Length: 105
Image 1 (cartoon, rainbow, N blue to C red):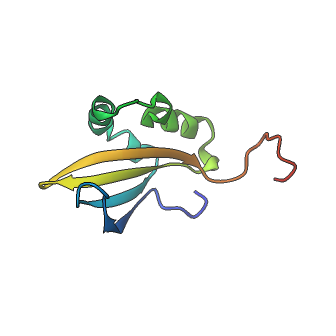
Image 2: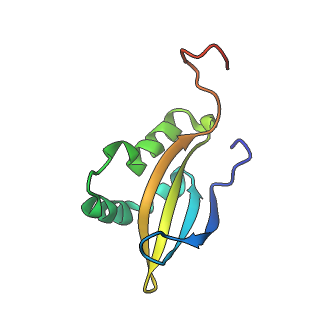
């Protein structure tokens, strides 16, 4: 899918600003997103303002509708005493928009 692996980890060398904990970023495909429901629910419970539009299920639906679009999510993880904790999620699609008000493709 657009040359991007379904699952890939990047370790951020800098520590999280206020915690001293390292952040690991995972590029996740739709199959992986189906496995993180418990972590997603925990993140929603901890968030000051939950963003339901980043729900991993929506990325999965988008992938089912247009599998060639390269739908992925960036998952940010922290390790809290040996317990991996989802810290953030950003859903993305790799490629050009089919419809756009922008004059370029």
